[in-house]
Image (cartoon, rainbow, N blue to C red; front, side, top):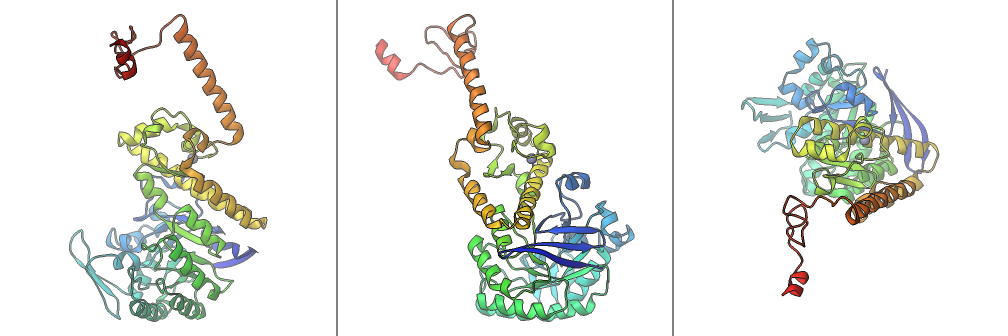
Length: 435
Ligand SMILES: [Zn+2]
């Protein structure tokens, strides 16, 4: 019922199509994260309009609240959260291993839920049972994700345990309308990544993920982990790099043959007032946006960019209005989906390397240019300069003859008194001359 077709290869970059009971997914794809069954501050309709083909929900959060029984009672995750397209659930392992007091046994992991202190136990069998009740299109195997940095011995043990747990997951997974994905571990050790990938590839799962990345190792080590594992992954299975990442990470991982990604970054950063565009990431609360009437990205077709200016978004985020978060999240997720669309097109047309170079050229130039030049094409910059020049001309004329410009109050504007909007004093040079 769930299948993957590899449509085209351009170097190591791949174009594929994943068919699920809730529709087809064109890969490479980015999956937004609906942690507790919701993208924070957004409706499923908003999410669909960003171009999202699939989203991810967290087993750990849904198991603890409201519990998989309630989700099952609601008719499964799709009905529960009102999202009709495909969904992937993680295994809960990643969240558990990041908790401070967790005891790992061969059977599973035991931890206390910080909200009410109750003891919770998760194992491969329990994770499979929960995920089958949640009813996503794709379920993830329960793995052991070691913290970073880890020693070779720790990572080696986690690779073996993850394989033993994978076999238990395969045994416990019965739902035919749900695909099971295995996870490769091995931290930042090439030999372990290769061993884990080879052994995982032999198991019977629909897809394979590379886990244990995006845990603080940085871009270079992350790509090294992909390089070590990828050659051992079979062509006919989709590859998913878990919890990644920044736009540069996505481009580089696609170049290395990865098909699927998920990350909280575009929505989490939206909540702290950060937006993305093809020049990089920017903070909307920065003073430079206070009087900026341009959209976040003049080339973006999202609802936010079509209707709102940076100065309004600056105001919303500064005033802690919820709408600010929503509008930034809509834009950021659209930016990520547009990036994936561009990558898919580039692979289809066998020009991915060209795309990759041009992406890095413009993305890294980011903040080195002035804000006016930052977002504009040559033509747009020219138009903007002309408009700006005209405004300056008008102000000059107004200052020379007729009406005097506003100088900041009744005391302003006379013989170099307290002129200017903030009562700026005349310069030292002038004062010195008078003395
Ligand atoms: Zn936009």
